[in-house]
Amino acid sequence: MARARMLGLVVVGMLALSASVAKAQDSEGGWLGRNEVSVEGTGFFTKDSQGNAVSQHSTDTGGFVVGYRFHFNRWLAADASYGYARNTQENFTSGGISNVEANVHQATGALVVTIPRRAFRLNPYLLAGAGALVFDPTGNSGGFVAGASSQAKPAFVYGGGVDYRVVRHVSLRIEYRGFVYDRPDFGLAALHSGSTTHAAQPSAGVVFQF
Image (cartoon, rainbow, N blue to C red; front, side):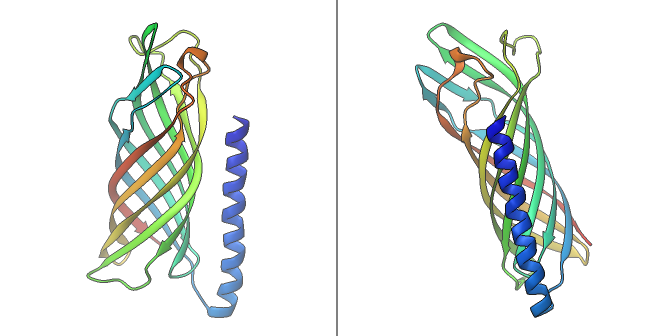
């Protein structure tokens, strides 16, 4: 949890620094900010991994992500997002199979670079940032291991997408985000693989600009 808090402070500092830079640029160049709120449905697909004689697989699942984005100018923005999904972390050890069903919460901050000029109402962008994934066991029968506890893992996030403007203040969005993070062990030494994995999150939804 201490690592997650530290990473969160870094993200906040990064966004604050960007805001300060953008404010100075605004006074010089007359750039105007723009707000966005987005709601998207997602897929969540995690790469298999292994280490310390533990093989791990996560079930594919879906969820949602909501975000707020502030445009400092026509090409730079800051993004804050929250996402949710639920999957089962399957752990194969010498002692057998241990399945932990967990709610997966994601909280991330990212900088977004947008191409200023639109073509055919399309507006592509790239993003990179950091945050945390919180794995919270559901305790449901068949997906619970005694002693498993909630665990936060720092994550690096990257990706990109494209917005299609439907009307003046509404766009459709297709996006891809990738997460790189250490596998959760839920505080159990028997499930600790020490491995790093990758989760792919494609999404599609709607964006409101104001």
